[in-house]
Image 1: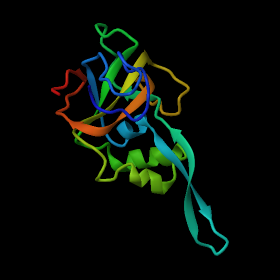
Image 2: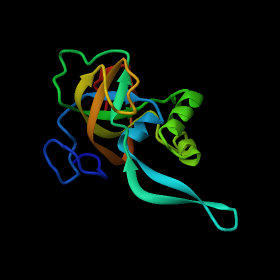
Image 3: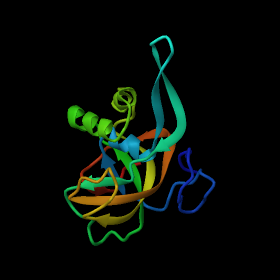
Length: 173
């Protein structure tokens, strides 16, 4: 058995959520984008009658459906392709990422949580299917020049420590 999976996706050999997929490739993504690929709770700040405010969970999950890159998928990689989602040790630059999240309608509180020190880094946190590589997209997450269209994200209950690399790589797990 492989890592325990919290959400069901295209899991290769078993759909029960406990089997490691067939692929041996991983893609490293910086926080907060890696966690957003797997999904985040949608929260809303609500004003109380006394002037204070509270945060309410709306019970939905918003997922980043595209991963932006400066390079296309190498021709030797056939799509669709299930890959491990690796979190880089270094975060995306805070200010531009934070502003992007706010523009996407994420509350400032949740946007700050996306950079929490307790989020995994330097580890595989799940898997996702890359369905195609595009140069144009209607997705609000697309910034280009290339976008890897993502589907069926599945997060692992425990991160698997692993050294990352640029591009697609075979993780040592």
